[in-house]
Length: 378
Image 1: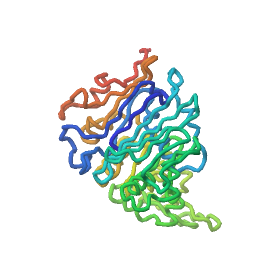
Image 2: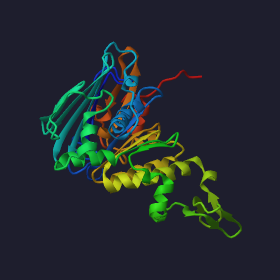
Image 3: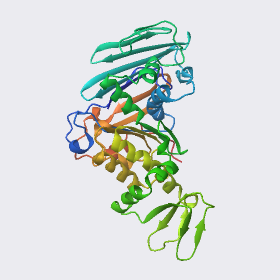
Image 4: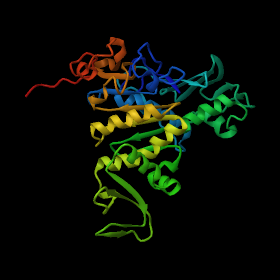
């Protein structure tokens, strides 16, 4: 699981910034929102528009892109534009079955050079500077002609699958099971195309989704078929299976494209939601609240926290109703501000030591934690 992210000279984060997933002394939701290794099962990032919330989770997307996407990732585009520094710095700390993994990625924009360091339980396993590297992860211990557009850790993984190294295998599996979703555009970055709704339904049918709907008292079900029939109408699709909604007490088929944006987003999100809960990994969602009712947002977060074990969910949201001690703990909540030439800064709610009985949403809206935009009254 992710223990910590450290950003520096990355997008709007000019100065060194740490996002911590270690649980604090709060006992709120301890049995639901905290894993057995004392790491938190995720976090929420709130703040005004253009403060840098998305850039936090973008750092996770960048890691997944660098590891698993085939196309070249232009790292220079992530440099902070108002910083004099040339080196983008990203560090990811994980705990995998009790073992600590620290992975540092830096990119020198001026010299177009990649830097990588990997530590496992404090032991340096990979040390790369530009074209040259030494490592303890493969038979080839020394590299002298590396491509500065590709991570060495990716090359070793795809060449060897870390055969015989159980910890590295499980770390890469955790990352490969992770999913990034931009809910506002319904764009999904994943390493498994089976999570696209059509592929998911071809392989699994609609039962799991409908069971979820029934358990949580949704007033509709879905069908995946080339011909859906109701009492009044029947819709065919020329042999190609499509998603249809059927509302209780009506029963007429409604093509997915004619449903509400909220329902479309929900159906597209649920396969990834189930996958990460069941397999581990990170579910990373930008604009989580896009077209969702407050009650649905709360249901999804509570379901994830209750049913996940070695999984985490990271969301960017403008829904202040999620800032509740019944949904997230104060150490899972981060406010993000953009402060002039300092760039983006974060404040972890737990730093202010709110009490379990306090109304966190009200405190946020009154400005106690920062991250609250102030506009002129008109």
